[in-house]
Image 1 (cartoon, rainbow, N blue to C red):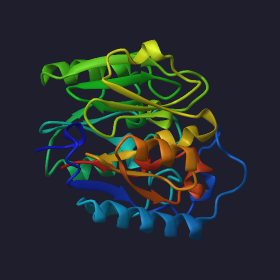
Image 2: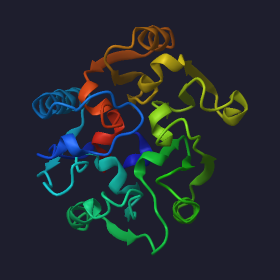
Image 3: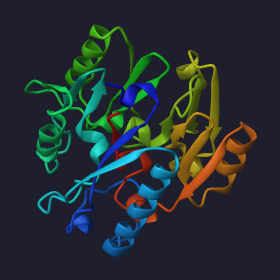
Image 4: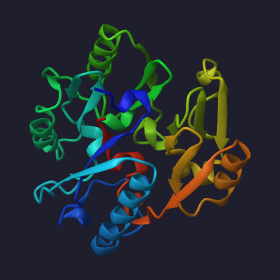
Length: 263
């Protein structure tokens, strides 16, 4: 079964926003308490954008005890017919992955991460035929090595990055929306870090949030309100759909956080 790694994005596994969303973990972009009603409205617009690009949206019910539960990207990594279920990196979130695993077990072989290893799916990007994996405050070395090993078993490459303290996850400032292309925010990584890439589109650091994208070939979804980024991506041949993400930005969440592509 295809999944995260192959860019088809046929099915997105999502979850409704928690009633306790305003208590979600935040430290990087936070300026105010997010608005629950606005977040729910923005999530519906996000679902609409996914469907317009051909993705079926599967939505699990909210978990009231987990304010961050709508960020399903972190809870599973799909490799061929296997779903890797990690130990999430923030203590308040560990447990969100269990009901995701229950849903996925009807579709995939489930492989759970061993004790002591942690990994958030937000530290994982698929580039061409390899997984790019970040070691961060959420993903430790053991977690990165676990995923690297699983990727190589399936004949995919793996490349490990050290995520700088200037950002939360690898995907926060970095994405690969189409084969050969990387979009990266300035100020976090060096050009030499991406020597393996065919094309790198650098986003100004003051619009770094918009470096997190969802790609469907030359069609791309980006966060609304980032004019410089929009212009750069149009010049690079992308057709662009914008989605309002302000409420999710307040709790350090980006576009990709809201789904894990499972088919």
